[in-house]
Length: 198
Image (cartoon, rainbow, N blue to C red; front, side, top):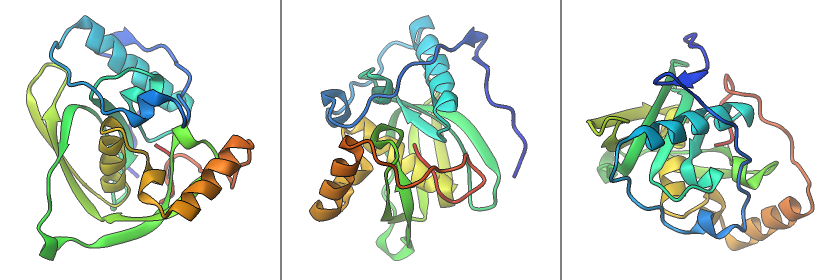
């Protein structure tokens, strides 16, 4: 995998580690508000998100996972070729894929906000997200493999959806029961594996 250092600062700003908000908090089930001002406060939020993601051993993190209701996510995640990608997307929109080109990849998925739990979930094996960088410049991020899953997972977060909301009700109830009991089905290692928490 391509060697990139974890970001210790963002645009010269040191991030503060925040606790990860867990399932059941209303901020996780509420669509986030669009960012309209690209300022120093946003830079601090992004720095805090990177610091919190690394501290929690994640490969992606949405702002509402640290209880901030803004459409921002950060990522540090490998693609299908094990090339590592780092970045931030503000006000992301997941771009639709032609049905004929869509291939589903069923793999294990976890979430830092549903700590200790994982389940098989089918998602398209490629994804494209359009949004803005920290300056307000338009950007597009494309990915396959784990990066594609991450881009979809984090965009879901900002739309008020957790990965467990895409699971059958019986599986979702089992996960929520185990999470409430503090059980864990095992730890994921960050991030050379194909399994991850976001």
